[in-house]
Length: 159
Image 1: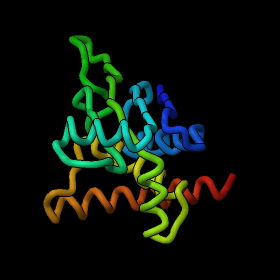
Image 2 (image 1 turned 60 degrees about the vertical axis):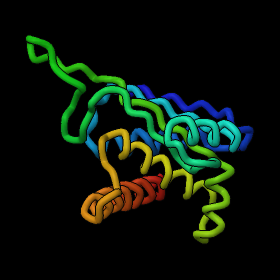
Image 3 (image 1 turned 180 degrees about the vertical axis):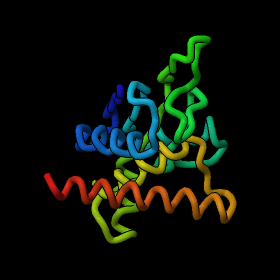
Image 4 (image 1 turned 45 degrees about the vertical axis):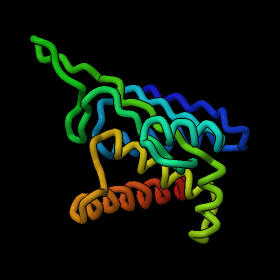
């Protein structure tokens, strides 16, 4: 799996930890092991620009997802050729804003690392086609997110 984490936010972030969590989430969702994912951490000014341009909403947000190929959980690829060989596909980009995550973490009563983990998992699920606009979608997406984060923390605790 190719997971690239670029930190352009100026904040000190555990990039290796974010990449390891992303790998855990993608493995848990049975995404092709050679799929490509990019995670970009940006400052509030850059996030505001992206949020306004792509979502037509003012100010910064915590996470944005930009899907590329039509990958879905349980489908081990973005497609197959005439011989049935799978194509790993380009999953897309997740953009995180650590300064917004830090504020949200304080409000939620946990650390910034935990908030960035939550946002990473959340962003990846959006790349896989999950949403939370409707109550049933919300229940499914947040249930998956909670399960993936619990298994991640359990796995990390064993190390």
